[in-house]
Image 1 (cartoon, rainbow, N blue to C red):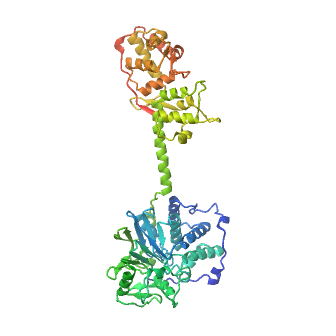
Image 2 (cartoon, rainbow, N blue to C red; image 1 turned 180 degrees about the horizontal axis):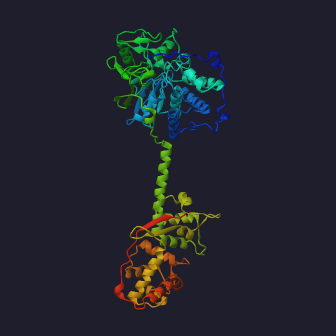
Image 3 (cartoon, one colour; image 1 turned 135 degrees about the vertical axis):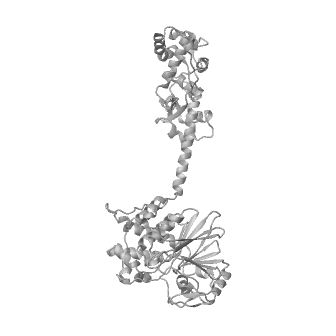
Length: 574
């Protein structure tokens, strides 16, 4: 791999003495055009961040420092060797070196979707250096980790190191994008994150994922790796066993020979097939997945298919022709390798994942809406029964029942299993004394009708009353409103009840449904006593009947036609 010739821009002393900023006191300027982060992060916020980086925007220093602070806390709580179990339907995607090539990261997300529940990701080190946008790559990964700490995992690579960053470009990139003391503070916080990154991961207790590779000598145990004090700058050429294991974990490479040899890199070793097999046997593992090397096809399988090298920075440094690759693994250890070349940024569109919390809330709201729709239909269907039940609890005819009485009537009349007390604010109003005006409650829900061509009919009741008057006049020869009332008042009680009204509607072959009959009856019953007296009847029928008599003084029974039933549409009025 080519090595960039970069000018060092600051000294270790300057970085060490960088100030610490209180992120709460940092102000985001009104002209800032990049992504905004709010905590806790959401799926939409993370996608907005990725899109912002894709469009070339720089993340505000306040947000960079917040990412570092939150990520540092998460990584610091993780083990040096992290165990990653997979449920039956889970998959995990392992990504090799990215080296600041944002287009490769976003291409992977385009091909494989961004992380989410059941779609885990493990990024295997060397996120920064050499590429043009290490800041964008690193901040993207930290945001994903903060958003989904149990779905996104990062292993440390040899370039997650202040010494490497000074030589291979990350330090210069940070200090050129964030000037002065702010740049030094951001760089320091990023190095603190590097120092708490886990060294390796074990998937399903069978697959070791490590950036570099194994150490020479007697094969180490996973417990020895777990005991490494990783919170430091990576050691090189130190003599104690722990430091040697950490060095080789970040620097070693596999070789075609059987034994181990010194590395041409000047750090780590070249470990052979015998070393791999001995390590796997000792730790009851099946496979090692590592990165660290640019390989032409993006992946390389060696050591009798017991070692897979992954490299995900395609066309590395803009000077190589290599493909990038990532590996997708299922819970039953099925492996799929995907090769690619990074897409043009203009061709990348990131699909927004479903935020679990948002999805659950959306489902709750949908269930509630469906429940309310069902209740409204039941209210319209059972309006007379509801009104009668409310009236039975209101002997003084005050028009009021208590909230508890209202809920009890609703349960007894409609559905005893529905939580009416909880749904009350969505269905009716309660006054200051905790009472419900049940007439106003029932009036809140209306029935509208549509004509045969689909258009809504206004004042549908007037049309129906007109048709009743026509048929009373033409079929029965009624010449006055009193005669019409007497026809409907079958028991001559002086008041028309629901049964009598429904009977005449049926006799006249009007064709209304029970719901429509009940709605019309309620419209006539002005004093809400569940009966229609002569005055109430005349108020709605007299004018219509007189118009009918004037228009056609000689009623002709042959004019009878069927009044077509109209479909019902329910609208809740608020």
